[in-house]
Amino acid sequence: MTTSEFRLAYAPGVTPGKWARVWAERVRDVPLRLIQTPAAEAVLLLRDGGVDAAFVRLPVDREALHVIPLYLETTVMVVPKDHAAAAFEEVELADLADEQVFEPLDEVVDWADRPGQPAFTRPESTADAIELVASGAGVLLLPQSLARLHHRKDLTYRAVTDAPQSQIGLAWLEAETTDLMEELIGIVRGRTPNSSRGRTPQQPPTRKKPPQKRSTPQPRRRTRRPT
Image (tube, rainbow, N blue to C red):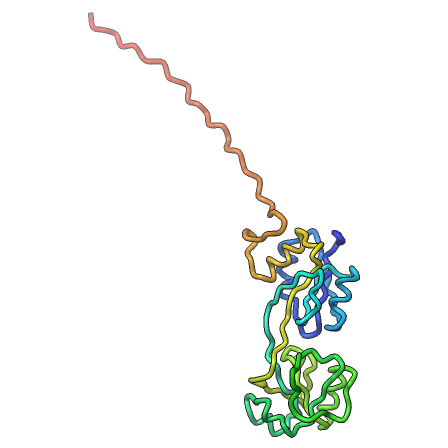
């Protein structure tokens, strides 16, 4: 692991900016370099030593990895703004029974049983699927963060209340649990600087109290007795 910088990969849809700002405040001597990578390649990049840690979409192969699950994402359906579903705040999987549902090759939601009808093609990427949805050829299911990432004025999305959810986690190699890694874990988990398990925070130098001046005892005045 390099000490000149800390390399952090993140899958599309993850927004690591808030953690990067905290890192910059706490770890001023080691820059944090953010590297966006396709979700399917994040763990490979980590194992090859290309990065020191990665925000990944779970599940992943955990062999020789530490993984901390962080949060779940709502699954949404992306549709044209004039689609019938746009009139509702949310939908259920049963509402998709007659819809042509695209399944891009970079799909990140883990489906036990895909809803709707298979579309006429499997797009190479989520971006390609978005283009097809805009053309009115079908709909797309994906995490809300990706729907925001691929936002278009002619499209909208609605939450699918009973769909499986995608989960984001922080992963790193078991052999690389360094002080810097512990620092990142503390930041992601919301620990304060004083409770961080990473590098020992530098304590401000203790100021020595100036020596107190001892008062010089005054000689006792002798009083003359009356004769």
